[in-house]
Length: 500
Length: 124
Image 1 (tube, each protein chain N blue to C red):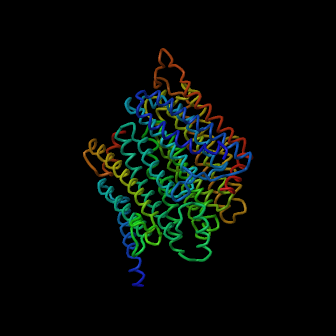
Image 2 (cartoon, each protein chain N blue to C red):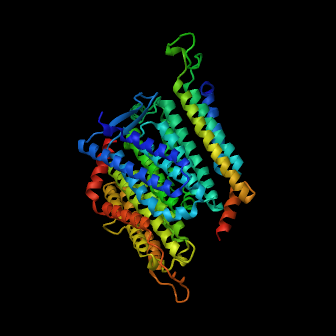
Image 3 (cartoon, each protein chain N blue to C red):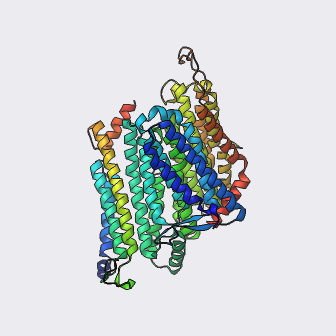
């Protein structure tokens, strides 16, 4: 076996071991640097693995400890999984320096290393969810992810953030319970936990017509459980507070990594276990499609009514996640690939919006409200430019990631009968609604405050935050790359989904 | 019909318990009752998993008297899953309780609705 095939194992254990060792580090800055080092190392390893697998066009099964299932544990790795792991690490590599200043200010000094431990555990869990071929291992790491995500939300220690974490944990526990019940029912009727074996057993059961009720219940509960965790409308109740009541770094990691891993697990679950034909026959994709359409409109309408900047961005996430479910609900391979494109576009856009709006809040009049952010972009131009580009990307401006994702979703809907009309209408309406709250926000931040209302400028300008500059430039580069390289990215995603 | 119900009695009990736990966790504002609901829900799933691997008349999967024939023992995989599930469930319960304690120390209530209202006022 080539050495590069060990990369998934090393990546998972590197993140876990460094995370645990961070409990011994007292210095928060050092802990953060080590965490960024881990994200950088795993990004390079995953990019190497992706290049090798894409070049040889192969995927392989990795037996942890060389024991076959059910004694050992199995990872299934292909270019699709390796590419996703690299993308998530790249996002983390950009998000961590972007939220560094708020991290040092918001998190109590003695707890900064523990916060970094949570980031490392989040990374390890996300890698397991990307690579695992075992459904129960997936469940265990879904739960670990829920605990560390709640820890990230409450780390600031304010009443509001602890209450948000509690709300998140409550709903997350409901999602986990439903997911585990779905796994149990599916195991009851198939006797398998490995996704490939489950796929064969489910197909055989579907063709024979046996255990139809149990099959629908098992798959439906798994999808609903993961939908609650990824904030599909109407299960999004936990999201606005969880994204807006925590420190910037936690918001960025939540929006760019945690919710995306659950979505990736749903896509993997569909491709490897259920097949689109079965889901179409059981109307599971139709249900996701309808909820996706409703979420796109609802999220945007709620965002329009928000006066607080981070809550507005959070509600916008409800709409953006709904786009992904709409793509899955189309019930075609092209739809799934377009959903993955939207997943990537959102991964690189939303954390950028959170980090840039926090930079604007720092130079604003003191609060998160748009009123207090008037003219803030003039004092922090890079943050203003990046926020504007992120907003325009989500509105669907060509050459940016959001446009490319919407274009692919629209293309996937062509020739899909009634779904085509609804998809195009919802995409159009949602884009208009996005413009109706992002463009006024951009105008606000670039408009100077009325005379006498502006905060006096400090006599000595603050030192340039190079971490923030690097983070923003990296986010912008990824956003532009996704907006321009539509063909190659989509080609890789389609090939990856077919192979999965 | 009655025969099927009797055959599937553990499954039936597990589904009823799961529904009770889910409703309490989802709908009850009292945080301690939410935690109890979550534990009932988890216990129901463990019951379902354990009965899935149980075979009437067979023993626990621990080799005794040198008998290695698998037909003497129940399926060991669900038992392993139940053990893992219990560890996860205990961790979630401990975390949930820690959060409840923090919220009670701050707001002197364990009603989530009241806590959310007070937290909102705190922001304003």
